[in-house]
Length: 299
Image 1 (tube, rainbow, N blue to C red):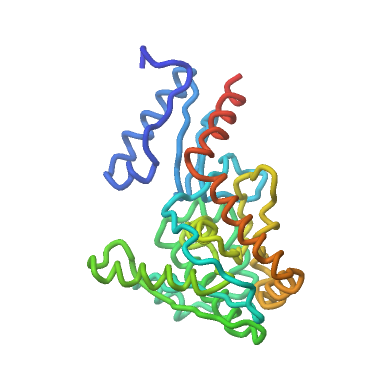
Image 2 (cartoon, rainbow, N blue to C red):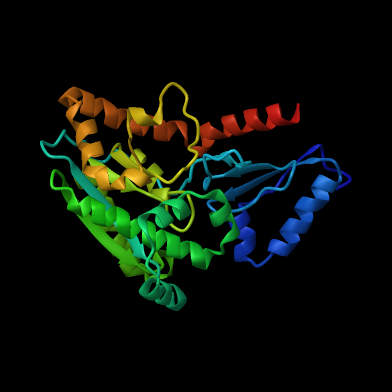
């Protein structure tokens, strides 16, 4: 510590330390840096986490809330590439492949015996205090309630052509061949549809959002009070159908209204903007924004 400068950067995502069961050492280190009157910069990735006072904290699970102290960053995973251009379909085609169930004996019992109202689910889905104070297991319950509701409402929309594949369980723990099969199925679903659902899971973030953008497709982003990374020269609404979670029962109307205002040329331009926004948010580009934020915060 004696040799450290005035800014100390935690070298890995917080999730890496938790995976190694070294969170106690990590938190001791963070407190030690702050106690030495230095600034610590931490990256949580998608973990729901509370920053310490004075910490510059970058996170992809964020909330549009006055209590939010984290700075929104993209969730980086894979680059799908613009493999297949797609023409504007006459009927909006909407795809989704992903978890809608998060198996847990306790959560199954809760869902069996407790009836959650729409207003209760709406409140839990985008509430900073609730999500930051619940452990992962209980947030999986929120994820199941939220995702089931969204998928059910999508299937009710008569004006859409939908392709939905629901899964349960942990993808990364699957055997290699099954993992490859499911991944190929996921990519094919994105390639074959103009619009792709992107929604929160067990945290208020979404890896799928960036992957959809990388393929030049139009995200249907279900907004659970999330604070998204800032874009330069464009807005999320330019290439993204944004549906407030409280309005998800009107998802078909939101997608149709977005679709109807686009000519064939406009549709192609929206797809291009989706890809351009992804490129702007890539690590080697977004790191410039991160450095600007750190510099401004420490001046």
